[in-house]
Amino acid sequence: MKQVNWGIIGLGKIALQFAENVNLADNAKIKGISSKDQKKIEYFKTKFQIEKKYCYNNYEDLLDCDDIDIIYIALPNSLHYEWINKCIQKNKRILVEKPSTLNFSQIKTIDEKFDMKNIFFAEAFMYRFHPQILKIIDIIKKKEIGNVLSMKSYFGTDILTKKNFVGFKRKKNIDENNRLFSKKLGGGAILDLGCYPVSFSILIASLVSRDSFKDFQILNKKKEISITDVDIDSYAEIKFENNFIAKVGASFTKNLGKQTEIIGNEGKIIIEDTWHGLSSKIYVINKGDKKEIKFKTKDNAYTCQIKSLSKDILEHKKKPEFPGMTFDESLFNMKIIQEWLN
View 1 (cartoon, rainbow, N blue to C red):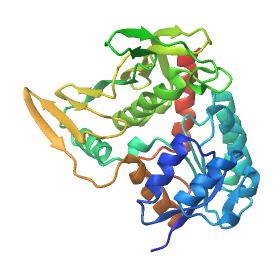
View 2 (cartoon, one colour):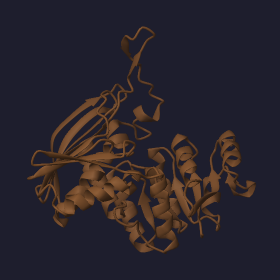
View 3 (cartoon, rainbow, N blue to C red):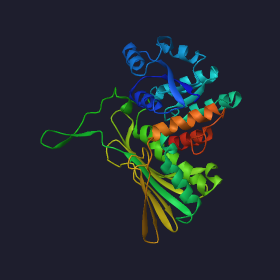
View 4 (cartoon, rainbow, N blue to C red):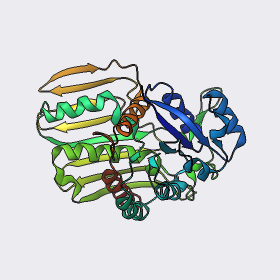
C-alpha cells in the first residue's frame, strides 16, 4: 500500500501522541522531524526509526525536504501563524494543531494567500473522524430526533486543584510560564479547549441548514480571568443565522467533562465522550425511549484522522473529506472564538 510521508515540526507531547498513531495507520509513516531540542530529536529518531538525514534542528530544512508530503505543525499556538505561512510559501500541505491561529485577523490573512496557492489544509480536530460522529450525522439527517434546535457542548477539567495525601483539596499556583496560562503563547481555556465545542457546533448547525455560515451572535458570555490575563472558566451561547443555538463551555477550573447533548423537537442525542470517543457510546432518546449505541473500532480518533487525511492526499484532494474540518470552517471557527474571547 502507498504511504503518505509525514513531517512533524515541534516534538512535544501532542506530537508524540500523533506519531504513535501514525504507526497504527497503514497508509502513513513518519518520514521527517524537526525540533530545536536535540534530545527530543534523538528520542523520536530512535522510537520511530527515522533516518538521520530526515532529522532536522531547523524547521525550514524539513519544509525544504522533497520527500515530505505533508507537514504537521505541533508547535505552541503562538507559532501556528508563522509556520502555516512558511508552509504556504513552500507549497507544503498542512495539518496544524488547533487552534489554527490566535485570532481571526491572522487566519483571514492566511485565507488571502491560501486562495492563490490552493494547498491542502486541515486543522487537527481529530474527533470529527471518529465513527461516532458519522453515526450522529446519520441520525440527524434521518430526523430520528426530529428537527434539531439546539445543543450543549463542553470540554473542561480542573487542572488548578490538587489533593494532598489525606484527600484535602487546595488550589495550585498558576505557572505563568506554562503555555496554558501564557497570554503570549496563546493560552486560556477558550483557545485550548473551547475551540472543540465551537467547531462541533459549526458542524451540527451546518446540518440544520447552510445558512449557519452567514452570521452569528454570541450571547450570555461568562468568563473568569486568571492573574496571567487568560480565561480559565468560560461559557457562551452561539446563535447562528438559522436560529440554531449552541451553549458552549471550556474550563481549567471545573470538571465539565466531554459531554454533548444535541436537542431536537422529538428527542435528543447524548454523547458521553465527544472529543476522544473513549467510551464509544452514545444515547438516542426519543419519546421516552432510550437507545444505546456502542462503537467497536480498533482505531482511536487520532488514527482515524491520520488514515482519512492520508487517504485524501493519496487521492490528490485539496481539502479534507467530510466531516473533516475545511479551511472555511476553520475561518468561521476562529471568527466565533474571537467574539467569545473579546
